[in-house]
Length: 106
Image 1 (cartoon, rainbow, N blue to C red):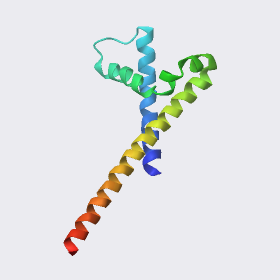
Image 2 (cartoon, rainbow, N blue to C red; image 1 turned 90 degrees about the horizontal axis):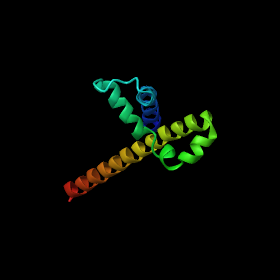
Image 3 (cartoon, rainbow, N blue to C red; image 1 turned 30 degrees about the vertical axis):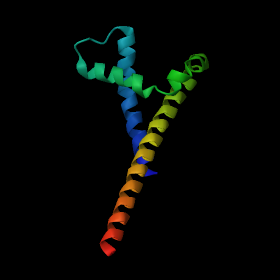
């Protein structure tokens, strides 16, 4: 559960500058030679997946609450994906340690 919360919070914190950078890019105020902010503008395209990519007609017709709610769901989605991946690796590591222990006992 802590991996989920930490990842969700970190992605949410990355969402803020990436949203602002993407807004600046859309408005034409982001300089092309500013690699730091351009990185965040490109990161927004990743963070907005899956709700804003798959459900765009619903997001645009729903207003700002739907827009930002979808971004929050995306943050939780990435938190869930990272939590599941770390859980899988932990389980695999435990199975490997159990196998090593069984082999050393025989």
